[in-house]
Length: 306
Image (cartoon, rainbow, N blue to C red; front, side):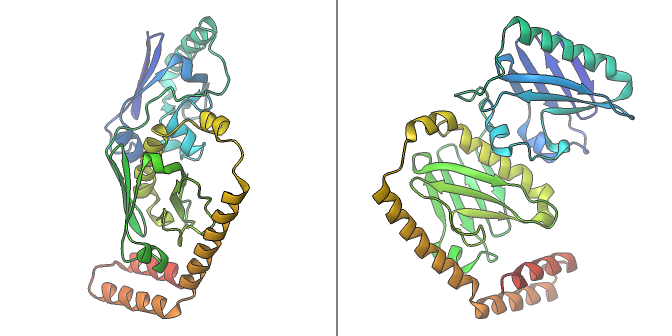
C-alpha cells in the first residue's frame, strides 16, 4: 500500500483503487469538501505524475476519457484548488509522492490498463440530492428529476416560462460553463430533440452563474451537472445509437427555436422592464438588502442588457 497525507487531503493506493479523501482544513476548496471521498478504480486511470516545484510539488492523476462524469462535465476547466485529482505536496514529502507514482505506474503496466476512451462511466458521480444557486435562480436534483426555479433577477423570457422540471428520460444532456472573473458561466439542461440557440440569459432551461460568485456557485453547479450526467446514457453509447436526425423533425425544431429566439430578443429589448429592475435594485440598496458591491455588480449586469 502507498499513502501520502498532506494538508489538503490524503491519497491512498491499495493496488486496486486510489482513494482520495479531502481534508477538513478551512483552506480546502468547498467543491472538494462537498464531493467528499472519491474512489478511483485502477482501470479508470490513464496516468499519474509528480510535478516538482520550487516550494513543493503536485501530484496529478489523469483519468481515461469518459471514465468519470465529473471530469466529463468539467473538461479540464476546474481551478487547481478545486480539482480532486490534484494534490499539492510539501517539499519534505516528495519521496513519498514519487513512491506512490511508481506503485501506480507499475500496477497500470501489470494490469495492462488501456489508455483509451471508456464507453461507460467507471465512477458513480456525486451523491444526490444536490442543489445549486445561480444568478437568476436555483436548481435541484433528487436523482430522478431536475427542477429549475427563477428569482427576481431572471429575464422576462424565463419568468414567463415559469419553473421548469425534467425527468432524466426527458433530457439529452447537460452543459456546464464555469464563471471566469467577470465572465458569466451557465448550467444548461438540454431537453430531447432540442438544440440550444438562445443565449444563457434568455434560455428557460439554463441557469446563469455570475463570475463574482465563482467560489460559491462553481462547486454546487458542476457537481449537480456531474450527478445528472452520471445517470444519463454515456456519451459514447448515446453517440453510437443516436444516428442522423430526421430532416423533417429537425426543420420543425429549428422553426420552434427560431420563434423562441425572437421571443428572447424581444425580452432583451424591453427597456421598460429593465428600467423597472434598476429601480428595484436601487430600492434594495437603499434598504440595506444589497451591499455597495452587490448593487454595483447587479446594476452593471442589468445595464449590459440594454
